[in-house]
Structures are given as structure tokens and as C-alpha cells.
Image (tube, rainbow, N blue to C red; front, top):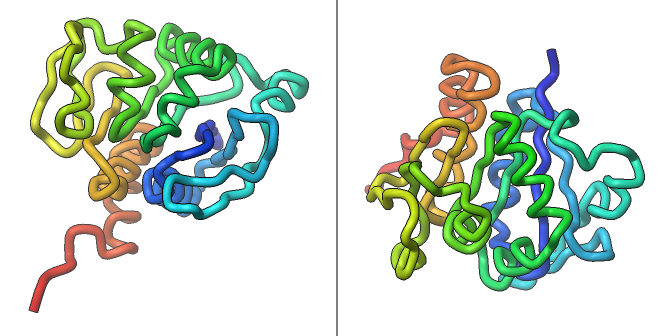
Length: 195
């Protein structure tokens, strides 16, 4: 059965944190839908790279896919102001919350665990990681120093440099460890070394 993931794009998103998971998940045969949180499909990232989303959040609702039943995972890239723009979207937050409550995978990295998930109460009682310093002031959840943390149906990662590990962990949870390991091997994740 094909797995489906929704990946949110908002102005100022961290490009590596969006494109790496989208690429790796698609390599594993997961249908990834890039959803623009704003009104336009063309979304400009934090480094000035524009990505063309598959659909806008408004169009998604019109297509009847704004509910958790359409998705196996939500992927939330970080970046500032990208994470803040996702957090400011009532529709995005409603879908993320519904997916969490339905036991679907909620996957966030860099600033997004602190900026998007914490205000929704999704870190309560969970271990998580995020970009160093973003956890300041958070009272819920337990910040861990690992690059990727899985707790229940929550997968979090610490930043752009962990985007590959993050994506592989999502694949392992959706498609099994062997498929995650296959993708990691195919992209030489972890095999780079200095000379």
C-alpha cells in the first residue's frame, strides 16, 4: 500500500530541510505532496531558492485532502521565518494536530519542533530535539542532544545537517528498516569522509 506524506512549505523555509526529505521519501516510493502554506505555489526559501509546491493549503482543502485520513506523515521543515509562518497558519496547525491525534507520524526539524509543535502542545510528555537554543523557554517535553529523536509518533531532528538522517528515519517508520537502510546506502549517507 502506497504511503503518503504532506510536506509544508512556507516563505522562509530552510531549503535543505524541505528538499532532502522530499527527495529521499520519493526515492523510497512514498508519495510526497509539497503544500504551500501561503496563497501561491511558488515559495521562496530562507536562502532565496524558490520551490514550486504541488498544491496550496487552500487547494488541498478544496480537494478534500485537508484531513488526517489522506496522509501517513506530516513533514515540517524549519527555517526562520518559515517555521513561524507555518505556526501562524490555522489550517496547517489544524492538520498537524489532527494527524498527531490520529497517531500519524508528525516529523519536524530545526526550529519547527519549538516554533510549530510546542505551541500546539505536541511536545508534552515527549522526548524531542531541535536547533540548539530554540528550546529556551519551553516547559513541555524533554530536549535530547541526539541528531534525530523518535518518541511515539513524533520524529524530530536538530537542523539542516541532519536532514538526511531525519528523512531516513521517516522512511524506516513508514516502509521498514530495510528500505530506510537501502535509501541511506544509495545516497551514501554517513559514508562521506575527509581526506
